[in-house]
Length: 263
Image 1: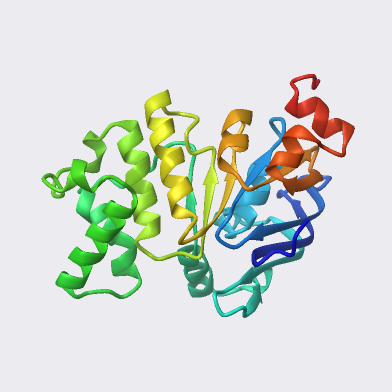
Image 2: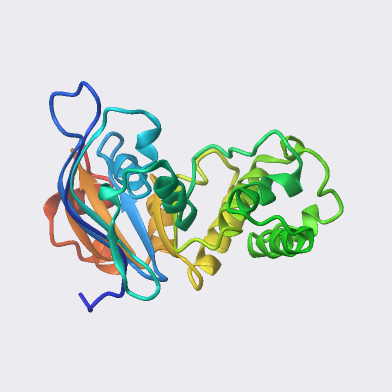
């Protein structure tokens, strides 16, 4: 595989949930390439979402998890930080601003469309009303939802459709100008038309951010991603250019999974 310009590098990473006798992830090594889309596939319970959520320490919302190994985040200048070493609350907030997360179910805040997008910007210290207005507009345009929202910015986000809410959540993340966006099955709760719109949006976003996406949908992974990682029982079985994973996998387990002969 060609030399990769890295956004995130996972090295010998293991993760154990509180009270568990065995780790959920075992010595995983994975590279997330800059300005590319990397799909994580595998059967339910294989550790895809656990790995994705480790990349911005969202597990820390519930204490008692055990991290081992390294997850290195590279900034645009090439400086590297092992995010597992971050201890302070403000460091974790900054991490989640530069590594944003979009969940399976849209999670708009119970406030106006404008305030949803402005929320993180205000938290990060932007108080100037003109700057806030401009940044919100840019984010909504970036999430391909400006035309649908520009005349109702002061209305509640809870009145939007599921697909619109998901794009709003993407706008909220994009507003903070993250380096990486993590998508945890972002279309599994959506209809086919909304799914197509979100996929198109993700494909466009990669010019500005690096993307990792967990998906159960094989077609989505093969359509959307540049690289694919196949996971099974907490281990990374195979990682390669997406075309190779789907057309010429080197591991029998991978082949069985992508051809539907699995289990």
